[in-house]
Image (cartoon, rainbow, N blue to C red):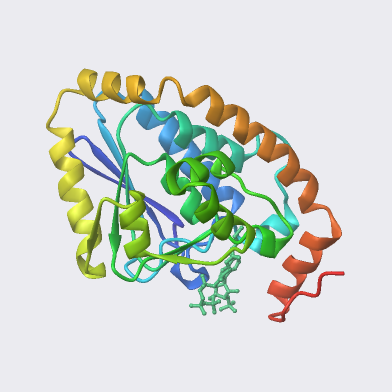
Length: 252
Ligand code: COA
């Protein structure tokens, strides 16, 4: 089974996470497929919009923990960092449709999307501390900007999930729909955007992001250094082993 499906309809490219048996957790190969698809879509003049979506029951459980243990990202050129830079700098409109759990990067990637549509079953979480890790995808910057410091601290220091009504209120999500309708609605919105001139779409996005992008990339780089170091430390090793052994972690 192809874990990232690519489907083109007119000038909209839809990337579907398709690994539902593992809750759409993301392996290095999936990050590579997503990073390459985004890079090519950015350069293809006949494409105007990219839509990221999962299944109506699950968006993504974040990094595949087993895969991360086996092949941790070793450099800035690793596929996960290529993907993160790709979504942070994607020059055309990037939409997402999110239903069910969106864990870790399943939530943090949404900070980089221009429009996010959600099923009413969506639940967002950034449980990096529970895994002995630290934020990634510039979430230490973007969560604070979006949520305010104290709500971001609750999400990032406690790793507690937040529900779709809160995501809607803070502006992370643009509209909430029944899960069976979310992907189709997002596709219709993507087609609507794709009927507009590409040059205007790109220039508008460039101007909206111009001040922010250097700070986002610098934050991602700093987080990536800490994340890479912490992956090898005892807390993450214990958390990951506990997940694989289906037990609660014990942090000394
Ligand atoms: N990495 C690897 N495998 C994962 C995974 C992940 N992040 N998330 C889920 N899976 C696997 C489970 O191990 C299980 O595999 P199995 O059937 O071989 O035992 C399968 O996907 C189904 O997961 P399960 O936990 O039984 O589903 P659920 O519906 O009870 O819960 C989640 C769904 C997403 C809430 C839960 O799987 C979860 O919390 N996952 C971990 C999230 C996480 O910590 N991600 C890392 C962020 S950096």
